[in-house]
Length: 213
Image (tube, rainbow, N blue to C red; front, side, top):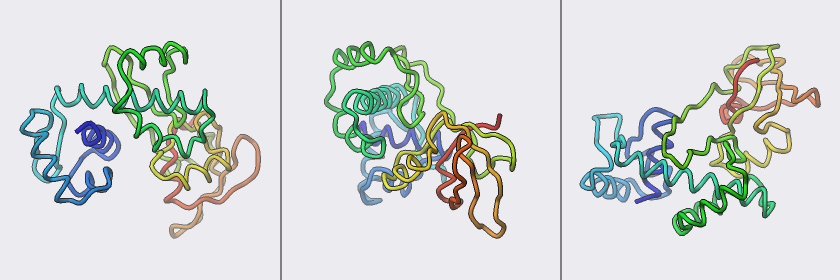
């Protein structure tokens, strides 16, 4: 149930809705399985259905979801900083640990790390109080040509894409300049932190989020 709540939270904050088909893809199950779990969550008062937009977390469900998100992102941060797990691998590892770690151990991890505000992908870590506002800044595809763009968050679902973006230096905190946008859906030519010039496709650039400076 925690996996589903976290997936609904992610879809709702990233794309604005969580229909069963998208939820199934996010969790990696069939649509039938996702629909069956959705009924269980609804019966437990954790989600509600709203027409074509799909599932929405109730206040009770959101509290549970934010708790899981906090555990996941703190674990990712711990694995990268302390165990040197590559940022493209850490999402899957944290998924396996987030349901087993105790609140006591999580507090120890948080203290050991110095109460980090963001995980390695730039995702905000909800505070222990549970008061959390999730937001996604604009994608690199919407950046203005010639204007500096600071990377804030990078979507972490595709390990191969993360590995490649890391090699290019397109990581949280990086300063980027979009130098050219090829027409008809062509590549974006970007310069990262004054380094080399790279061409990346729009689909990849959509995974990089930040703000113009």
